[in-house]
Length: 113
Length: 227
Image 1 (cartoon, rainbow over the protein chains, first blue to last red):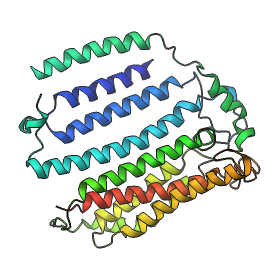
Image 2 (image 1 turned 180 degrees about the vertical axis):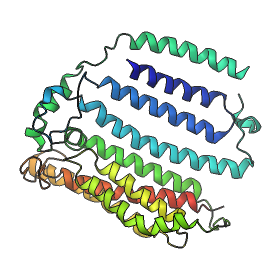
Image 3 (image 1 turned 30 degrees about the vertical axis):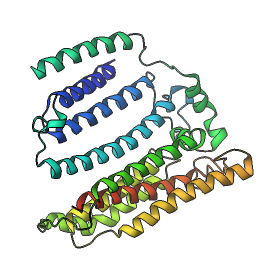
Image 4 (image 1 turned 90 degrees about the horizontal axis):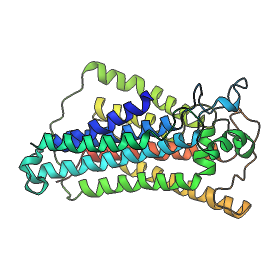
């Protein structure tokens, strides 16, 4: 249960940072936090009480006590895509900095809300 | 004002999330497909790491899409940053003795560790993506610690493209041998041996090289953008 609470705390903190902070790089950090929270949530959905990693390197561990491998494989995908998205967002921030001369969202007219 | 509005909105969102998550039990088996993979994974794929067999065998096509997204992200980053011909000149400070020494001594060791992670992807925790990221962190150390030594952009791009081509070729060979894309046409061997699980280690080694060169390309682009 604590995993659910923690993952939603991460998601909500990230969304708050993305909505309230002024610096563009901090906003991207908030979005990565949301990403991490969603990954933690997916992993904790696949958790089984007392379960171990789904790897058969030790023959003494039976398959019944292993956690669900599907969310783990999905999170592997999600982490890689999160990396690509973060890198692309940072490159856009670099370009925005050269164009506007500032990273403050309040001072960029097109990004005001 | 803005902060208040966002807090109220997030409170509403949190309420909705709690209502939704209350219905999901914690710590019990939920999917039938996960149980099937754990029970039959070794028989079907020969890989003792079930996550690897899901990523590269049951859902291998999905992984091809994932690799493509990483590729598209790297290409888009290059397209955004390289709009002109002139490189922006920055002042470069020499790294501290700790960093430059670490860069010389640790670079091969980190590369070796990354290679170990992606070669043993079907036996131990880890795999191509993780090992590739570790190898790329060795290249990041080079970028930070030894500014004179650089990765050759053309070679990393070549490695990246070769990785993608070998992945697709392995899939097409499977199509020719077994009738569907990414069919495991190599012998499965004994479980828990290095040479087991058919094409899974081959694909993970290819993915490791591809991810490492892709992240190195991203770093190269971020370090030296044009005007």
